[in-house]
Image (cartoon, rainbow, N blue to C red; front, side, top):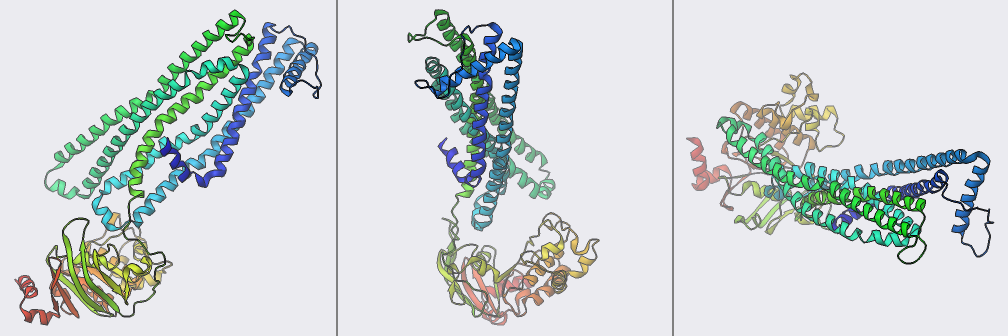
Length: 616
């Protein structure tokens, strides 16, 4: 439970006023519940004529009498005085009406406490989802290369849903039920300390049994949620690779894989849910046994006429009142046991969520970073080496300069480290050693938002969002107007095909741009970079996946985009980068050659061999 209360301190603090209101209303509900049931005592006395005592009014300031005794005496005097005037039936109706009024107040307080808890429950779930989402946005790209997307999606959806169903649904019980239990046990002590001590003998055993089952439930819930992540990962892989699955007739294979993981999850959830539904019958049985034992114990005392401690025992109506309160206390105890069962499931999910929330972010911004708003001189890459975690070195002692306004191309075979190198410039990763400087400032000393604001990216896989064409082009530019978006689209050779669509710029591109061709997606991506108007442009295989006609249209758009900008272009097709001011040739993470196309061709080295192979 320490983990639960630690979590509540973390997420419930903003809702302290709501919690205070819920606590107050639950206290009032419990108090009015006790007072309403206490009316049973005079009602039984009237019905069965059990009280032959004559009551006289006692002044409120009478010395040597407690206020409690005066209050009870005068309450009985009022009832019997009313009965002497209106008869026993009239007094009975009066008490019944008072009982109903107190019950109405009690249930109103109960409703109020439940209504006050709703914003807490929904607010905590929303806060957890937002915290995970913000963490996902802030984590470096390297984190997601180590994690499965389906697993992350399962934690955001399934695990947060489990927290909502198990923990936040238990918050109300954990506030209401302990308050009611304390009020009821306070009433027990007031009525009969002797019976209360007898009842308390059973409570530790009750709590122990619930705790044992709850601990096992948390462990099994953690295993079940891991299997849920496996399921989500397989769904995500299936949707992403559906074309390959069909092409290789692998439907049966994928079906068997999915059946295997879902069957494991079914069996695990069977055990988890079986334990969870055990809460009600176990608490019901233990509670009934306790009531029977107390009933027999109290009945023996009433028959004897004196308590085991030798003192006068409570009368029969008061004993019945005690048993009613004892039966009433069973309801919050049962609900509390359900909450105790539900919390381990939620904590198991929270443990998985915390693996994201507590993940280290190595791309940390300095406390007082240098702020920049323009690009004036150039980019310096100085003795940069890099490795992913503990793997082999991907870049080794790379150094070169990129002057402002220059067009630099990086070429080499697949796996040479080209994309990794350009990912270091906007700080998607940090170098293992060496540094990258912009206008003489180490990129690690700059504000990350300022650094990335200087750059525009156009990648081989044009990443579009399931939104309108307008919103995809205007992505990342606040307050972009239609005129600005149209102008960017025209420069990117995209305006014509956009206007051919029925909705024009308001047409949806579909999931990841599925409603557009590869060349159209790429031109939308270029229009997005043009609208941002960055001084530094990074092109990562921007035309590699296009046919000849689409490549020509995209290349024209890129030429317009690259004019007057510092450009770093990664290319496999060497024909697209011949006009670069300098070509950096990489092999096995090292710079092996550099120069213009003519210089490198004349050199007759690795670049010429690459160029000759493409001429075949």
